[in-house]
Image 1 (spheres, rainbow, N blue to C red):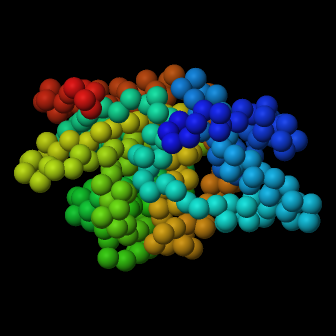
Image 2 (image 1 turned 45 degrees about the horizontal axis):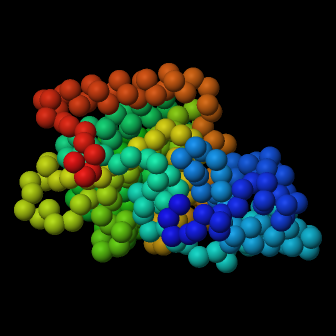
Image 3 (image 1 turned 30 degrees about the vertical axis):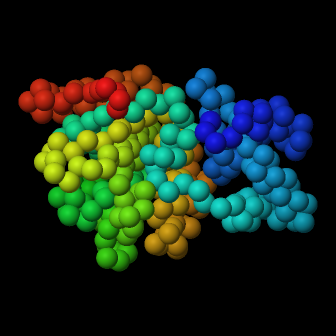
Amino acid sequence: MEGRADNAWLTPREVTRRTGLSPATLRIWEQRYGFPRPERLPSGHRRYAGEEVERLLEVQRERDEGRSLPAAIERALSTAPSTEESVFAGLRRRRPDLVPYLLAKRTLLALSHAIEDESCARADHGLLFGAFQEERFYRQAEHRWRGLARTADAAVALADFPEVREEGGAPTEVPIDRSAPAGREWSLICDGPAYSACLSAWERPGQDSVGDPERLFETIWTVEPELVREASAIAIGLTAQSAPRLGAALAEDLADRPLSSLEDRVGQVTALTSRMVAYMAGDGGSSQLRAPHS
């Protein structure tokens, strides 16, 4: 876990000792309200920052004053600075064991289509987020995304749009700053009750002379429900920067939304992988996965 000494992180047992909240309660709150926000070791074990423990204590003080649990958590989080400026960076901080692969844009597009198609086929009525960098890239995919939005509870497209644009039956267009970290990334998040998947990629700088299909991205992807939920929370934070009301509504929705079921997880991974292989085979055999430093 970057930027913090190992002894600055607390185990669930240590958090229980400081707050009186059991590990089971911490997990329930995390699932229902997206709080607290632990980091994950490569083994999957949770570790909590000291600041997060302080927020837990603040929630308890708010509850002692008569506030409901959701209201207490909202007040505690409202004072917490948002540090995530991109989905890719946020996921890498939470799970440094996720190995990024260096992919050309044509391959990344094939993987994105596979995830989108699986979401559409399941008609999962979840939350859908896409980060497109530039408006022109979204316009190329707009027809697909309008179809995806019809089976989603909410769909958001992030790009360098001139303004927020909401239209019934279509993704909400939300502007991002192209000079910010989120302006260099390509992300896709499908967070539904029966299907969850996330792909996030960061474009390497200095590729102005490279042909568009060959632009290179460091890419990670996951179907872990808890990590996909983290990605959703980060995307909502980015949304709130330009569309505060929409961000607040999505955050409230996320707090009440259960994680994707773990039932038939192997079947879901198999179906998604099959779609990925089919798309990549259709790429003429030119797609290659390689580590970013190879």
